[in-house]
Image (cartoon, rainbow, N blue to C red; front, side, top):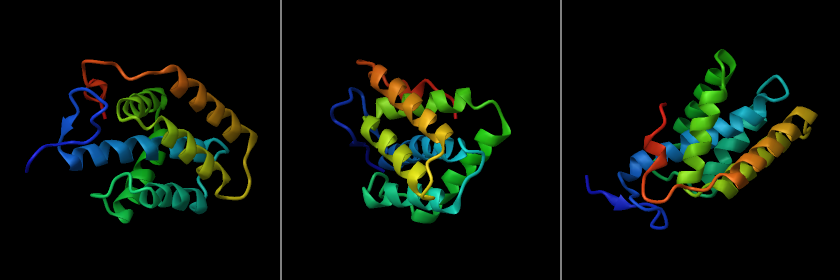
Length: 150
């Protein structure tokens, strides 16, 4: 399969488009699941909004809607089952590397609002995400998404 330039503004970003789409989905579903879990549970409408956001903006066209939902479920389960700091760090590294800063904040906001109630903990998580993504800039000259573990 040929390798294509996915995001030309990121140096060394010659990647298989399916791999890039998977990286995008992992990053965005992790962050949306993180916000959804902030109030102690994931509402079905929050999951649906996260999946719809990725589909609506065609952020990962090679990955089916069903598979995006499966990624969301898996990331939510990982966040519930273990210390989530490493999982969040990897997701944020991906968002910076793939120029998804706007999308990570927007998907966090729309996920939090999906159940028509934005909990105070969700607001705090969104503020934290904003703070982190605005202070993190992609590294030039290397591929930071390759440095993290899944």
